Length: 477
Image 1 (cartoon, rainbow, N blue to C red):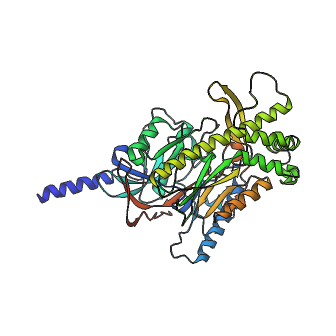
Image 2: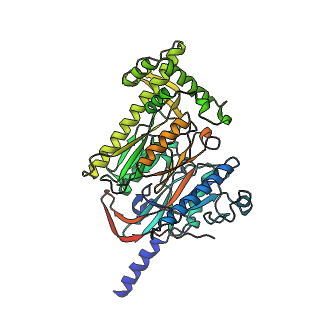
């Protein structure tokens, strides 16, 4: 009997360590997962050093230092230091960036490299996991099968972070489509997974089988060019709030209203170096139209049905601007509908949550096409934020790394709104290194976070166990 018991224990232990650092787990070894999100305590911020973002990284390092010093001054006994880990960093490159002696920078590691591919968010989603048949918990890196320069990064991170394993869910395609990337996989503080309608069925099946059945909603992402939920909303924790969170959403209609109220041209509100950029020229032209046809614009904003139909004819200049404004209204309605779906799902699992705080930030979208369908009518497609999308922020507790929209009326409004929910915004200019490449700060960063141990069955039932935590021990070698 004792020999049999010893054999069983040995067999169980063997299954727990079958995936070594640098190797993938099998999906069948995972009982359940808990996705880590903005509400979990950050320990590291990841960013890739490329040939065009050195100045951004220097500014980012200063912000990380400021955040750490502010938190240390609070005297909180449970304060967790946030470190900046720079992928592709060498001792020489850190010296060139004047970061060699910065105590908040992780040492350079030859184990982490991804060439010029800076989209570190999209390569993976980080979670905690429970092994099948046990209560053992580890950190899990979910490889999104993105390929390209970051394709080795998920396994590389398992050699840097202790108690960390990786899995690559089964995909029929050699490389995944953008809908499966990390920027399209987000979670609320009450563990609702919100993703896009473009998430593959294989990834949907993976999440549903590992604890998110009935805890997942799909946003309409069809109108976006990149197609990620982090272009539409961000969710932050609000302590002592009945719902425990606030939804921060992009609002094109709000952006139009702010433009309509502006009394000076845009060039007086942006640095000289941006004056010749097409995006700002476009917005100034739109601002002038809004001022010239102010009352008509207000009526457009009130009207929920299309006024101008994009048929195959040449627009007058006035009609062209009406189409632009109309597209912003349609997008605003789509985002609001997505937010409504998310709120409904949140309340389903938290019925005591009656009213979820919603913060609107001004974001204008430039849509390359407008399709006219019999069912939906005019529908904008292939849309990207015209100015840096401040909703696409990285959240480090109460500290928000916000893409600077450059336009000062937008920035002032955003700062005021975020401070009203007791968050500290840090505006970082990512225009040249991320925005013009169709991404923002959230797309170009990722986080190592601490999570309480969560036992979740495959049907999605969750129970937080005693105060055990994945401590996130870090191998600095």
